[in-house]
Length: 273
Image 1 (spheres, rainbow, N blue to C red):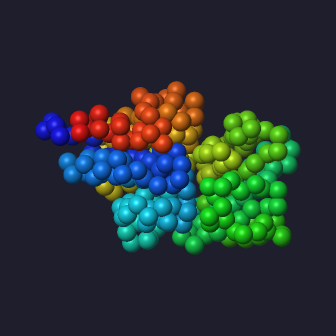
Image 2: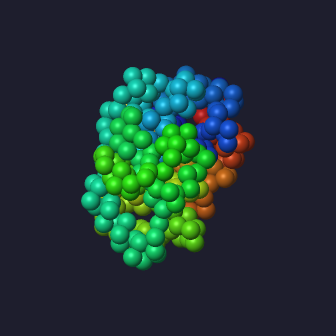
Image 3: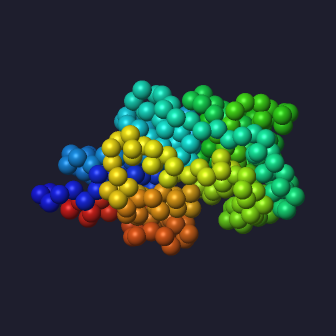
């Protein structure tokens, strides 16, 4: 290991498609590398689009007990204490208006919602095709009455369209609902409506302040367009080989895929391990 000063103080990693392999595990090599960079004083923080409830099983499985930025930046979660430090909700009237404006442009959409809080459910209508990544914590059946979707505080709304691709849908909804919500594409089948202005950068900035680190001393890893604001905030941005083309376009470098220990490879080079 090099005796040179550490190049970064904070390592921010997305989970799905980035830190995690496709089987939702962290490889032994990546675990060793993260332990090595932490041994020289750098801190590791998870920054994920998943809600805290959706994130907890994975963090428990990999032994992660620090702060985690969850819910596309809307939740700051203390994994060790299983406690929400902060939580931002989506105004349900604004969300309904955004959906109405979008459907006026693209036609009917399938809808799912993520309820706020550590025990919030993932509810969906009968036309929504829950991606496999979301099945673990989604309700077992679609809601019978659409009013159930709006009955409790929400962190975000997810939409699908039977004809438009994810990229096309995200662009169309973003244009139709401009000024009302922020729209992100976070994974296959996940086009999300968030509180206006919210992003992973919002949550990472807050977490960084609590951890006593600075943006120019942060290196971030990701794979999807919802990571773009985080890349813009961090001092150095690394996209995975399997990343969306929009994210690769704004990355400082591209590493190997999540299946090929891309995070570990980049950190070993950056930290001269």
